[in-house]
Length: 383
Ligand code: SAH
Ligand code: SF4
Image 1 (cartoon, protein in one colour):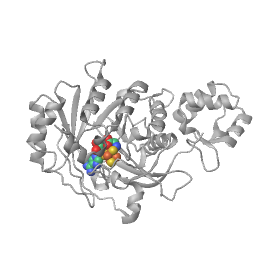
Image 2: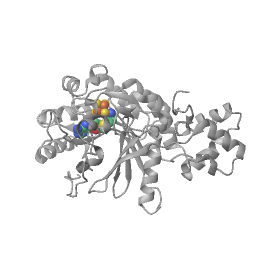
Image 3: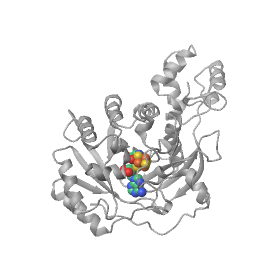
């Protein structure tokens, strides 16, 4: 089992969903109900020390200690934005030197608390406007590292919140990396998010965002069917080829057909969220708004406009407020539901596309040296 092995050759049980755990216990000659028992300890009570799991025999606890760990990542950096957004830099437990750290962001809102998780260290897909893409792909996270982000964020938030209830109500795979390029490790993590004995989230509260890996969109639909967000960013192939290079492999006609399959046969409310980063003078004109409306007409679609979040060395600019508004109005007039994503945590570089982890930070500055600014971050008006 390559996934979730520690340096000491032990299995990290954060990496196994309920079925995987039952299978692992079976290999150890233990009954399947042990999986349920263990999940209750890990996810209900937040216990990671086998010695404390007193409803298992001492012999079993010792065996578990020999073979396995329940090991969350370690926090190597934490920042709190003026708007309440948290950003953590998390490293694998065995390598707290931050070489392989990823970022996880918690965004509190009035009616929900959203955790934005990473799926890869870096990303190979090289979208022209994305800071994560600029660093290339370092490696895939394993399931234990994906679930570890959720487990740890929940503990962190609870400890800050005086131990009050669960505060993460939604999970979005919109951190570092392309989740569908790490499909093998993604699916067991999603299963744990949905499992009543795991985090118990409903399917519509877990969103996978993809730049359009068509074959894996179909598999996701068949296997876990959580909410889908697609990073469209351009309404025609020429421009999309430039901004989202994976479009050359899966052009719009194939991508849109996959989106249609994703919502086919579902109830009226089901839709794909189309993300559209607004780049000043590049994809934000009246012509593109018209083409976008044409592309999405008669589809189960919502558009989420993301005004470009700048970072050092970026080639693009965020359009002015009036231009953003005009683009949104054009889509509204065409009958397309359109929201503008409010920028959160941009004073701590936690906004979409600004997550670069340590890989790139290391060359520029030290994460812990970045001061937490106190001025209010810029906000886009919510429609
Ligand atoms: N790889 C996945 C998910 C991570 S990025 C994907 O591409 O969908 C989450 C969203 O942020 C995507 O829509 C992505 O295109 C967008 N994004 C990336 N860089 C950005 C930037 N600098 N400003 C605004 N949005 C950005
Ligand atoms: Fe990768 Fe998404 Fe960034 Fe594109 S936008 S480079 S797919 S993380």
